Image (cartoon, rainbow, N blue to C red):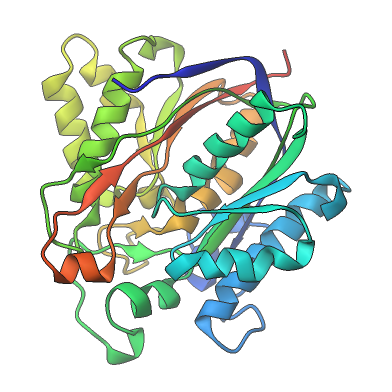
Length: 336
């Protein structure tokens, strides 16, 4: 069982922002995004540089919302889907703030928030930091599968990598949304080699983390359990596992579950197959949809788990199983 860290002194969301592209703008959450670029290029000449610029815009926006400057940050924790996280480093180096690059695949949003929370909690040297996560559909397709210019046929189980970024400023100063507990995820064998079915690969890790967390938490005290990007197939598998494997309250856990991969797009008008994926998926949904509801008090307590498929193009070509991971944070309303 994973170890849950409960915070005696919570860490607060001081600001947050969501940036997206064309598909994100016309999805059901589009009007809640802070910035949308319908060309997906953000003024750049390549998809990879566009993702870097997207991260820069997201963090700048979050800072401006609360009249902060980069000098007010002690650390930036960031990650993306590009090799060696070059979108994050390339987009954020101009801020001149100490930087930690993370790679947790599509779980990077929660991983970054977890790492930053641990740093703020354990050290007097860190009082405020930023966590930034991004993904770009065209950059990810070029790296992991085939460039979109090829017009390759996508399988029904495939998910649409979000062109999106989420930026979060965490601090010890009291605000209306806070992190009160966190739990690292375990790498779990997804028992699939199919890179076009990442939802299935991640579902077992999501189940493992949720089952572990609620061994010592009461689901009746939670409003929602939100996973990162399992999509339609992964979400169906997760709910089935919860109902079958957890006696007594598995049905309750299944009823609380929502998935960012199913919230970001409208399946009736957007051809995203099984749903959304990518680092920017859960990050942008958290910033545009979840946290505003927590701040307003509509949601009092939520367990948030970005889910990641730990693979590379090389590992898939070599026939390795795809591992999943699902770190978790507990987010609550209130300043006390």
